[in-house]
Image (cartoon, rainbow, N blue to C red; front, side, top):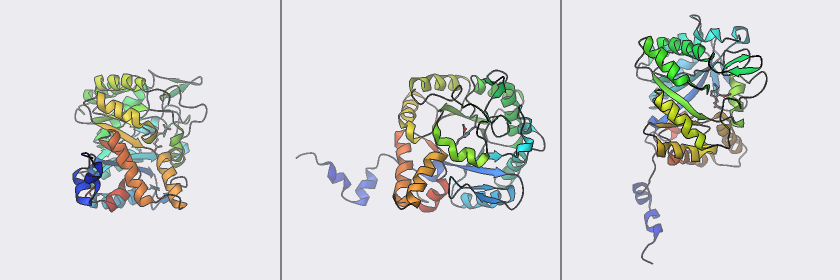
Length: 325
Ligand code: PBG
């Protein structure tokens, strides 16, 4: 036998030298949930280990992440029912606690990368990402609302905005509104291929943001489709997106790979709440070993082609692997 692949696996030194994929803390974005109030740190029952923080509790949490070298955050607001309406007006209200918090985070931690969520669902009494009219999620009339929300977020100091709503034309519309208001440096992390997935359950529990009627299939992508992700990627790229995202991650590794092969932009993958919950549940039951399953999972997303990974395990990864894998 001239060729023996096992020679490159025989010691840790050789294995590490021959490793094709690496994952470091700078590739990770930590999604966090915030709610108004003080002294609140409530665990999400369907996502053990992840909390909803009031602003005073979130700041020290961010501080401890920064200490670990984890400095990219996407923050999602849980909004009280009384503040929700059909037009999501609280999303750009001057009283909005999420916008105030963003200002505070960026003044305390100017070197972090703070990413927002742009969609109507946290603020909408209908629980949909777009405007609901006679039971229909209307596209074009949603765009000005998303643009107004985006300008308010840019003004609050977010470094990048994350439109997660899947309306047609929103990247261009938001880019134009940002530029018109002078926010030419604010980036857009486009949720390009976001699928109508069952994997968002714990996230909707955390924000109490499940749709009040119907589902999201008329705007989020059909899990059966792959080529359609290329159409979305073309549109988002031509409309000015700075990064493209695939979501969820594990069930869509082929889509991550496809976009990586076909785009010059950085590709992000969102390892979503349900995917993290499944792994955590199996580990908490003693069926899988978290210490091995977690890094293997994140590495597989990276191997598929993700430059950047959003994962609820970001902090635990940073604690265990300060020098990466
Ligand atoms: C909605 C939004 C969702 C997630 C991020 N933004 C859920 C949805 O589309 O209902 C899910 C993220 C996760 O499950 O971790 N704007």
